[in-house]
Image (cartoon, rainbow, N blue to C red; front, side):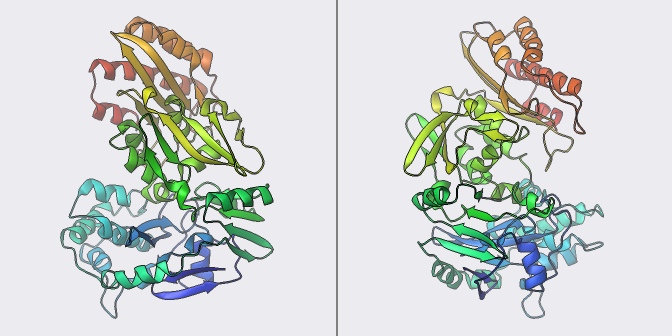
Length: 480
């Protein structure tokens, strides 16, 4: 059974297929058809809805892709759709701004844009164009009406108006807190089950009792098996309610990132600590995906083009893995064993990711090459973590994604750099060594020759950046 607020209506679902997406639930069970299906893969934003949750005693609103969000994620949340915004005959300011600025053309994408604008207004402190562009980057308008939509965002954020949601915030917080339960919950239907543990101990016990269960956190990758491959997953264990997995902490000598922390949470935590990671994460899909997708999930799915893994490999990260009450530490560079294969044992899960401070260079950077600047998959991803001692490379950790069946360190390239000055000759030898590290495949994103040449050029770019020959802005433009 799960319980949540549909706007301000308490909903209790005792029998529901846990493979059901929030999008399908809204359209087929609640007859709310304002939320649209555009791509069923989290790319277009037409299905965007807002989820409210209690954070430190206050309601926090986040836009999510309902086509990727399974119904188990609704437990203890407030679900708001475009139908909920109007108060009587008066449009919500987010809707009115779209009307005033002529932001709607064919109208199919409009509900998703409105919900992203609604969530933007709830967290914005005045008008900030970059913040608005970030909030709307996951919403595509096929009529190319972005200028008036941005004008609507400016009107909405420049002239904030208290709405009914703000007036009811204290009551909403109380109602959501009343839905919290320390016990494991189960949602079942159509012969399938989903467990919702609340603590790592409960999670560990469930993983041992159901060793073949699929763990789901944000679901931004796993849900595609349901929505696009039409698979049915018999047993799910949802991690959303395990608060301990979301904690990010700083210690004297290391950072510890909870495996269940969202990518946006990790970005915020590391923004002043390891800025290169946060800068990279701004190009990790859309805000909707970053708010749902988790760091541990991106590692565990072992995709060769997962952006988080090369970053963590270059930072020499290690994983804290748990089976039952037993925990073990494993260097990340030993974790991947083959295409989408890892060292995870039956019943084991990733609890946290550790980054030792001593390994983090102040010049750490991570660059992504893709066809689009926003919301796209990498053709080549590179992360550079070099340390210098009196002009000589004293430590080198370089990792790539999209170059092999797994994310991987460039060991030959690293050896060509170690103990040598970072000059044109050294970089030329290191670039040539990349051909010993990787023999990339060719696919629809890029050819093998292109991938290798780009990897070599990114190394040269790092050298030029290190010398001050190019600015960060020029690099950003180059790799987009």
